[in-house]
Image (cartoon, rainbow, N blue to C red; front, side, top):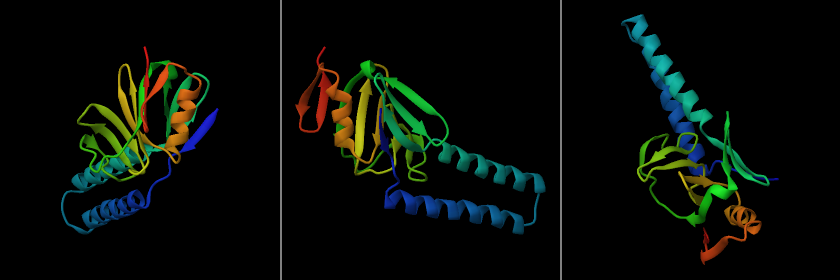
Length: 169
């Protein structure tokens, strides 16, 4: 079993700090304004739920065991069968275009336009993992070693380029 941490980059930490400050200032400003108490409570509740969602979907670490790749979130996890992985590669994308997601608060987490799930805490260390049913874009502290660990026990993977391994069916 091998663990790969997914630490937040300086960029994500700064966006998280700034985003949290904005959410906090919205909450405190609402209490200073006169108006309907129920509306203030509703807006603050929406802000707290959004904050909780962003925090819990953030990737904490990735574990590779004998048969699975496990995405460990702050709360919860997702198992991907190693046999389902058809391709794994390093990627470099300047802009992660999302249909919805956090856009940097606690990471770049959400759905991308290309129908991939993104769990990225460091845009300089991204991997794309393609499975038979879904694609995932993640970041880990050592992406090259992760590619090696996934492909070393599966002889069906062949190098397609320096940063890409594909499954030879």
